[in-house]
Length: 346
Length: 294
Image (spheres, each protein chain N blue to C red):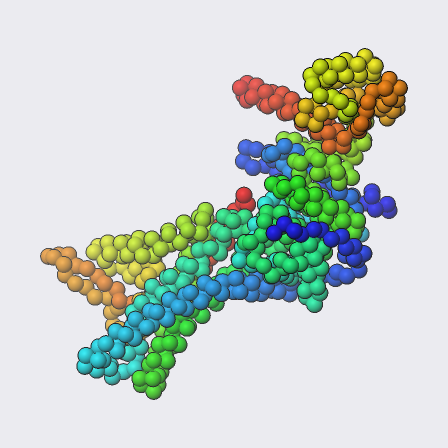
């Protein structure tokens, strides 16, 4: 079986309700071996609840979770959770540690709890701490660590028993760009080692850079799940970013904008925008590569002074994300209105 | 602090090559309980040392009082047990201090400081609970044992022998530790902060129970077996266990008596401690099991 299509975790009709709120609603999701699946959604969409359900920290009201072990997808239950979850490393929300303990002490404990071979624990702990460049900190108290360093230790705590699957809940939230980049590189490195990563975040750029597939959840409902390219072609919506030389003031912007519009208007799905922060023109189109090529060709032929011409993955993901979320919000509001009407009738 | 860089080092090892699961099943469960207990003991070493210092200070205070009286011409008691008893007047308080400081943080800390988010996926809550309880009980018992060893040491120096009743008293003290520790763990299971759990369990043990006991002594002759501090009285009461009634009645005014119970019977203390400890611990576990992470 192709590892890319071998399902390693399967969520079937998963539902979790908290009193009056349905946090996860009939969720069906498959995670493939060796991929990074980005799990996106606004705050309160159900990302953390889904991860807690996989970690058995919460129990679903309905539905089932299957995890592959010994070549078979096995249903997660209270009887086999120790066995099945050994293969998964979890980092749920903000990792907090005992501040008076050191990474060595803490990671050793976690490796022991997960049944990692005792004779190999010392080496394993030193190796993974070295992997994230914190060797000189291995015997320092965690209370002295920066947030980025603590976050890395959090990921290591999920990784220390060498699981083949990692479930990481917003590992980059609240970090500075340097620390975010380091964690991004670490995740790619882990993927290259063959690990499957289920990663939630609301930092679209981080997901766009590393995820093989993206799942978008809103109001507990999975609204999309596919590769970025497939989502783009389904949505028929993309955006080219064009940066021109010598755009200095409003006159230049208006003039260049007018000229571009005149040249390629027929290819655009929406009017041209100018992003003042990044200094680029945004050209919305349907994502067809042929059209993308033609737009570039026309602009070059007409001697537009292009210094950058890109389809940004992060911006694309943002556009797709907002489309799905707004559609989901509309549906959810309509559903709520209907529910209120039914309630009134009753 | 931020001069760390990720050094990419692909070991090429996949999990299947090097990782063979160890101890699945009951052996693994026991191993996890042991690992949590060991970690807890190491983590609380400083607290244990501080409590040992407090125990030592209490011992020194009693020793100074004894030496002062001896210096003033008051003779040593004839029986070594009576001399030992003089050092045990504050043992109930020492148990309360140590049990509160150990027990109150056992559960609440995981929710207060969010350490549960990192711990619970790695170990089930019941094993975590059992491991922590055993570790904290052992440390607590060690502090009390340390105090008794000091007392035994001074008794041996003065009388060249140690009365057996001192070790019986130690046994009751260790049972009382179990009772108070269970009670504080119950508070730890539902309070929002360690400080809250400490304050409320101290208020209950030092004030609420005393008030209830005082009021009851006015209106009733029922033995206060539901008042936790009452169980502390057997620690010293066992030195002179009354053969007949274990209570005394004093007239306050006409037709109005106060009934003071001196100590529970050994059977009563044993059964009461067992029942209360079980109820407190089981309730704490149920609350812990159902408590949601933030």
